[in-house]
Image (cartoon, rainbow, N blue to C red):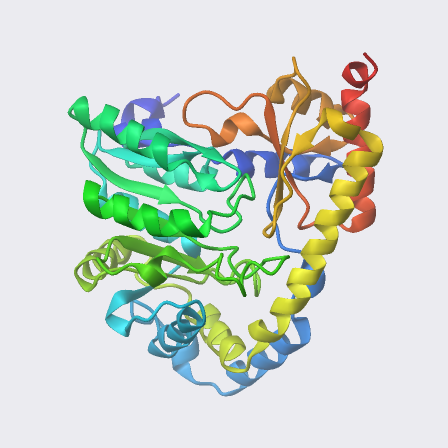
Length: 407
């Protein structure tokens, strides 16, 4: 037999798998399993009829450009629609600052490959999104965690971590953050901290990678009060690289996102993208262009907010009914997730193993930590299951925890 291991590059040997993708495999192999693992949107609000009509018109036009290769940076009409979306979020920019990506995940990967050298330090929230962890680890970055509290990243700890790493002679390149309804914690970065964070990045001379897939999925009046305003909207010094996507608002099957950055970096991202996919899917882009132009996403947004707020409330009520105060969490004001702390003495991986046997699955909290911690936490996604399945899943989780709850 051929030993393929010896052919692997250093990068190939160190590639990091997504814990969320791994849990998806568990779900696919199981029968009647309630999944609180992946942050999938609810397909009941996919705009099936409108997407069908848009696709029909596009394909019946027999316009070769619809199915042809396209520019690496993305179709100009899509970039123009993205500018409109960005304007609605308070971000005033121009075409030369934009590149289309295959979902925001590719944007993270491009940033990692273009800006991070082996051994560079990337600061991340503790905990943080596993996709970000994977992308930066695969670029051989050293990931260093910064504590969070209920109002987002702890700026005092951020400064302390920077001082420690800088004193050790490390090259600190980036800070990766998800300010709006963070994955996995659901936290919302406090408005006053946003301005202070921008000032801090300028003083410490590093770039902020702002990942914003959930900003329009708010449940309270936080958007009208300016609490979800992107960092990039107030970035006067060009410190923020901004990522967003239609995955959570239109449908994730359209691998369409965008990255906002200074033109000099957009040129580099364009070149890096050429070596991976040449161009994002043109048909996907054409459909998204029309969905944005016709206001499909704008009409969907209030329904999405109401649906996910209801599901959050259902999950919280079920936890209170079946588990009580032994499982604790902070109520998310938007997004897809409840970040819960387990009863004393329980470890996430052990509970997960027992939970699968009881017919429910979630993501272990330790998967989101770059410091080896988080074993007392779990992430529960309420976005995809129906309310009835949420209640059943929590009932099964309670049965998993019953030996401890009975003490």
